[in-house]
Length: 179
Image (cartoon, rainbow, N blue to C red; front, side, top):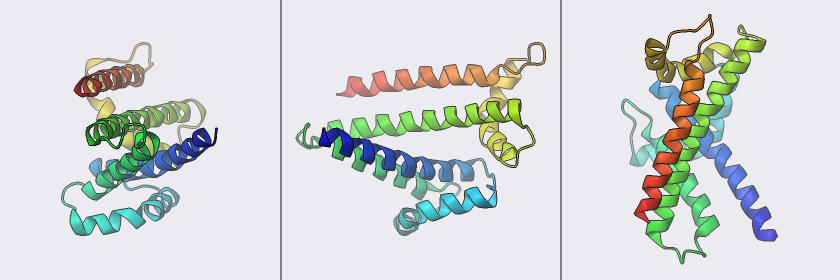
């Protein structure tokens, strides 16, 4: 029981920290400037790890230090979860860490799609709506070229949600085949 409570806390903290690191990386990839409150939250919560990593991995076109920071957090969470059970088998830990990181990336995209859908129904002019739309646009733009709106309804977010779930399953199957 104590182990499951410990793992609940570890996974909650790790998912928040890694999610913030992944958001920081994606914001730079799509070159979107976050609203001040979101930016302060993201940078204050991630600077403690990103800044030291930038000395090892200087930035360029992308903020690789943020992506590496997310991977390190996921790696530590996986070590806490299965380290003793696997006998600290590096291969198992690495594959599970990659799988979890890719899973969290897909979940992050799914969350932003759902948030954008809620904004479009409730308040399309909310202060965060343009920011969330800008985060999703690089993923939705190619689909919108192929899938026209039907009766004024844009189905591309729904198609992207399904594709992300398929991607998760394919990646999980491929990575578990390595074990």
